[in-house]
Image (tube, rainbow, N blue to C red; front, side, top):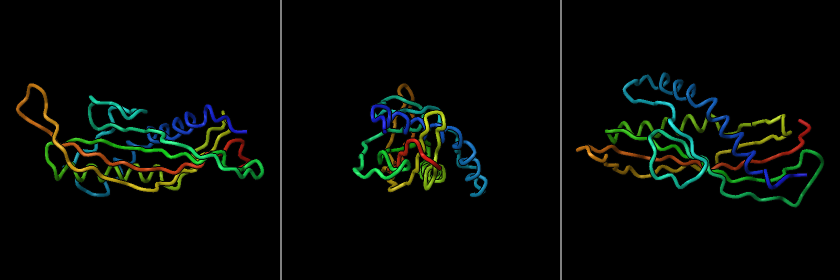
Length: 172
């Protein structure tokens, strides 16, 4: 039986652990593949699990659980306990808009590879997740002025909507 009181927390924790474990290597691989070292793809400085952060340094990752649906069908031990909607966003910053656009695209590529059609397991709690990226959106470029300085930087966000199937007590 699903423990709905902890369902979203376990889902979020597994996804966040996968991002933290793989983002540095994926960003490095993309940078090597593109053969353009002029665009910086530093690893995230901070991870947030809520959407209300107003002051933060970039790059950073937001991972927010939006909702979950509990299907009525329960067939055997491998039934889906819930389908969870999760948003994962990367916010990046640069002093040049063209470099910022490329940086946002590279973060999108890295996160897509980590999260799309992936299975994550938590044997301690006997939970398995299947993650699929449903949609990706890029924000417009916006300017962030720095207090006390006569300069500004540009910021951009890339956001992915995930559909995550949450299984508990899987046989596989």
